[in-house]
Amino acid sequence: MKVGVVVFPGSNCEFDVVEGVGNAGGDAELLWHGDSSLGDVDAVVLPGGFAHGDYLRPGAIARFSPIMGAVSEFARGGGPVLGICNGFQVLTEAGLLPGALQKNAGLKFLCRSVDVRVDSTRSGLTSGASAGQVLRLPINHFEGNYTCDQHTLDALQAEDRIVLRYVDNPNGATDNIAGICSPEGNVVGLMPHPERASDELLGSTDGLVLLRSFLAVADRV
Amino acid sequence: MAGCGQVTSFPVLVEVTLRPGIADPQGATIERALPALGFDSVEGVRVGKAIRFTVEAPDAETARSRVDDLCQKFLTNPVIEDAKVTIE
Image (cartoon, rainbow over the protein chains, first blue to last red):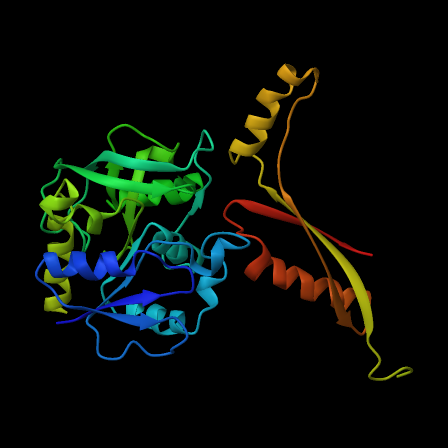
């Protein structure tokens, strides 16, 4: 079982994700955004950073990277796809997840740890966690303010697709949303960084339950 | 048709703005700062971006339809933004 971590020009969390996946007991390799194939990986992570400099909008250019065709096809076929921070922004721009990430309310770049609550365990990222479980995870973003229209929000709520909510909303996100999933649950996007909470040395291991869930789902596909 | 194969270069201005109802933290911050700087009676500040380029097309109508397509697919995120296109 192998996880592919996509590197865009401007990504900066790819090695953290490789380490985090390793800490969770998995194997990860880097994939280049300019390739059009995912090779033989069983799961894909779009890591944090500033893909293509975040020019125009975060994720706006990354979604046209050659590898995104393969990522979309993989996602549509039920493959586990995880977008962390900038990766979440790329997934929304690519139309693999609904809504958009707006500038934080208060216009501050936020770099600190926050509490997030697991509100749905039906996604590939949260299936091994317990509903109501609170995790302490780092956030590191300027555009993390989740926004969508009422119709989309109604659907997300009705279909139990809001997987993580902030306990104390740091960025103005609609309905305190920190992470959502696709209707099938295999595509997940979140603003917090579970890979940065995957070792005692980092101050928290709360991200491991999420990464292990993701690996377990990838193993079953 | 006359001038078959001829294309014209049309200057284009695309103004990207947040859709009504979408919170604009930049606009709100600017508006809050204005009274302290001595600018009163300013309301409804909204921040967007202006993108200028030229597009080659046989006529203005074709140019507009190409730019509309470009706005929909790339220059705006239709979830949160609108575009006003001016072909000059």
